[in-house]
Amino acid sequence: MTALGTSGGQPRPAAAGGLTERWPVAVLSIAQLMFLLDATIVNVALPAIQQAMRLSGPSLEWMVSGYSVPFGGLLLLGGRAGDIIGRRRVFTGGLVLFTAASALGGLAPVSWWLLACRTAQGIGAAAAYPTTLALITATFPDGSRRQRAIGTFTVIAGTGNVAGPLAGGIIVSYLSWRYVMFVNVPIGAFLLAGVSRVLPETVPEPGRFDAAGALSVTGGVVLAIYALITGAAGQDGRAHWGSATVVACLAAAVVLLIAFVVVERRGRQPLVPLRIFGDRGRNGSYVVSILLSTSMFGVVFFLTLFVQRVWGYSPLQTGIIYLPLALVLLAGTWSGGRIMRKTGVRLPLCVGLAAGAAGMAWLSRIGPGSGYATGLLLPSVVAYGGLGLTMAPLTAAAVARVEPGEAGLASGLFSAARQVGGATGLAMLGTVTWTTVAARQSLTAGIERGFAVAAGIVGLALLAAAVAIPREVSIRSAWPS
Image 1 (cartoon, rainbow, N blue to C red):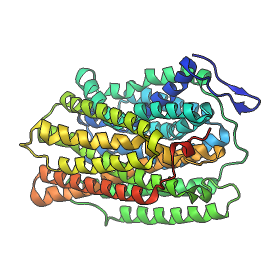
Image 2: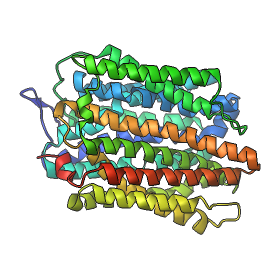
Image 3: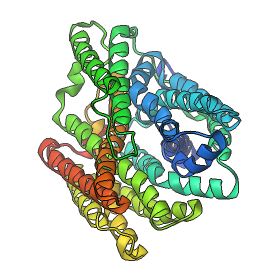
Image 4: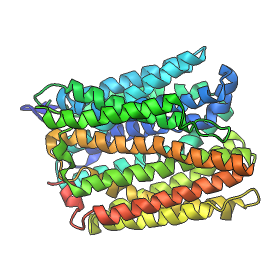
């Protein structure tokens, strides 16, 4: 690895070509892939964890949400911390916490220990994840090389949500559920060994933390996600939206988020300067990201459930079905990056969303007697190929025309939109699915209706992209030379 550092108080960019340019992209892409994988890799291992830890259904669900809630709720704070403290420093700290929590989680003798480690993983990921895209911009300051870097970055990282179940199936089948946690340890150690040598430190922005803003937005997001998960947590066919806990959490979340807007308007050094929402294309990217994640996260969860409960697939077989989807997503992401360099971000984004909606509508016709090829593979290829096309254009729109000192914040907002959308999606599709299951006494009917709702949500994302992403937003505006 070739050393990178700072010179004259400014980040020293990677030299053009060769290993010097590839190592920073590899480190950041693998790190982001690891964080995304951890949000889904546990799904296939849940039955084994439930048996080993003797968990009830609601407790088992928190093995997933215990990671996603702090991850989504603290992303904004993590992005801003990178701007103020230094992005490499925050990235390294988050990576250390994530790796240590993974090691301790694999050793967990009781459920509360494992849940605490999952929460610590989420906090570490929230610190490191939003700084990855900002470190790309610091390492590659010119447009053409930044295009190549962001293309590779999105191709590698974009497979995380689909590759997770495959990795989980292999690990559970041949090792044990504990290695779902242990697998992060050697990867984290490798990344930590290379961080200081291949990534530049960014110059910290003068200022201090907006404590009131951080507490209000983090508390509001965490309470909202908690309420959504808790409200739709029941697998008895009944949602729990009217419970005192859910109502109180939602009310408190609304109050805190309103307080956040008031604090940011009046603060001298706000956590999220409201001017960052002054770009229509960037705002559109946040809306599209929330809707897209709302659909994708829920579909992966319930598709895994369907093939195991209805088709009787083993954990390994369940993981294998995601391999072609990962390859299709990879190919779509690569193609989307190439297309946007010629046409701008709007065309591949809208085409990809249209294909994604069509594929999910087709997938909603899956049933007990459906063949693998026509019932699952072909519609999934259409859906994930299309959604892959959206990855690079959506990322480009999210960081377009951002001031250098706010790159970490913009990245954090974009990442938070995806995580909040994922938590919302599981709650929304869960409510639709389990209510239908109770009414019709059929898991298949519930999942089919849930997939139909997911297709409609992607259709809304297409409408939002067509309306909100301006024609003039191009790859050049996202990565100025």
